[in-house]
Image (cartoon, rainbow, N blue to C red; front, side, top):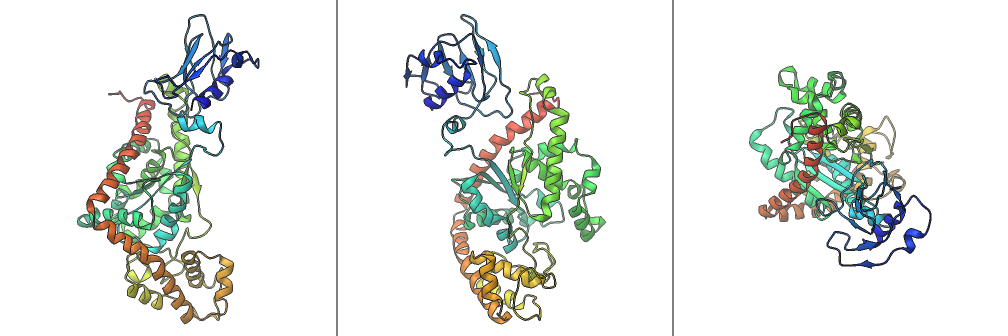
Length: 454
């Protein structure tokens, strides 16, 4: 880290003269600060932080990287500062950086990871659509990104639900996350309601959300029509604002979404930009904040396949927990006999052979896609294998593939649920890590919106 900070200090001079470099006397490991190094040298008369990346307290003869909490912290959108250096005077560069970022400035092999957040509702059983459309993709994302995965229990109450089952369903969903391969050494796993900032930020965002934005949401119209007016509460209308809070609270860079959630993410982006405009930048700085954007504007991550797994009884409808017939879905914990029966009875057609992407054969396309994703093969390989196959042979192959793939998940699930204390510990630690990030965001928003601070 000493070398990383030293490299940055060499950029601080607005002179291209080697005088700064040649006047370095020593680099030691005696400093008590996070850099573990002390740099002694002379500066030119003015300094310019060209890459806006480090917080420094500097005098004429020595430099110690520091801040109040004795560690680097990241600040987005920091502004370069040119400050005069007078004899005996101190100055502080406005820019800050995390320790990993400083190291990354010297090595492209260790870049700062972008952040991804995602969640699944705990109502009902986690099914194949949830797994192939979301959870399975998380396993690869956790190796590339900083990831937060949570059980969105607050979203689960936007429609009528069984209060006696919510807690059990939440724990069950968390256990399935882990059984599917979510690695808690790489990802934070927690329950949405355990981080109260989700609700706080949702309320603050609501004040900046035009009602017309919510009225145009397609999912609200569809769900309210199915539920009936007497069963539709305000929570269903404001569902997208809570989703925006889930995302913006963690300064997310990317959000894995299916096609049906793209409209909600677009509202999140619009809301982030609106709040940044209304309360961020100089307005926030005048209130004592750091200025700049309050929220990152997140991007969508839509996997090329598997983002929308369809019902086994209707190839035009999404596989859903809320569908009245359990026959319409494969639940991850279904016994092998149940899986075999559901595949045997699933809807097909009378066309010869099997093929992808025929609009007249939605069920065929759906079942082939499931087979492709479960086996990990390419679309071309599956198409070649199945083009002359009859439904009886294909259904037997699909059944075997599903049972083989889901069996290890079911075994791991039983291991996890046999030790409730282990699961509680995982969720508690995940909530703690998430709350550390969330509190910073929501406190900044309170400040920017003019609230009296405690």
